[in-house]
Length: 285
Image (cartoon, rainbow, N blue to C red; front, side, top):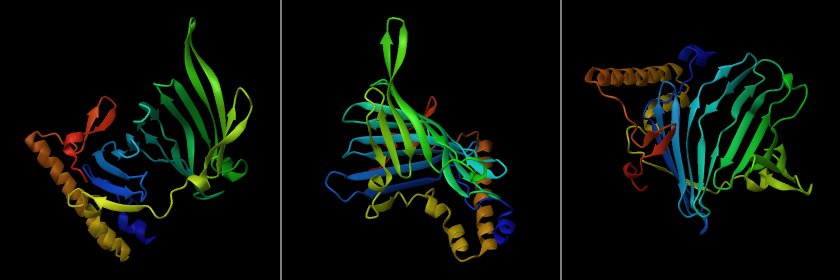
């Protein structure tokens, strides 16, 4: 209705190149320490967001990027998250490289309505030679069969033998990620709980503090006027603010082109296929 007319069918928020967001989470316990997250929009065409999350107390670091390209599929919209994530565990000197499932909004017109993760995911560790493959299974057509949030998969270990590489099946995984995932030992047949959603979900008490908000590229600062217009229900004013932001981006792009300058991210750099943090460029926040 009104929103569609005001925004000409486009979404009100569309990340601009160089946009940043930084936050610090206080886990409010001696063992948890602080987790710090830094994000930056490193490309506009295609849209790519790079991020870095670190907890020095726990010795955990996650870095990755996401290239988002939504696809309309008739009765649903599927959002692929292209790119890899790397989880580094300092205590055991291990690095896990993983992909992410697609996000699907289904039932736009008919059938069961909701959001779910779908598709295949891989998690690999070169140090341990462990490989995990997961399949996030979609709900059946129009929701007529199957169930929400089902996951199936396995864990294998690669071993080098005289005739080449073999992959030994160690465990099978099954269940629902929003309830319980079970781990079945392929050798003994014993089943145990791998993941309990109710037990593992984040507690509400975690305190978060915005950081680097003084930068002109900070998300809240970039979209401040547009957000205020939306909160007040002023759709035409919001559309005007969005147009002003987009026009300013075009002007900056033209100025760089006229001077023969290439835009460079403030906090991240491209290393082959990965977006890595520029350690020296990040202030301690």
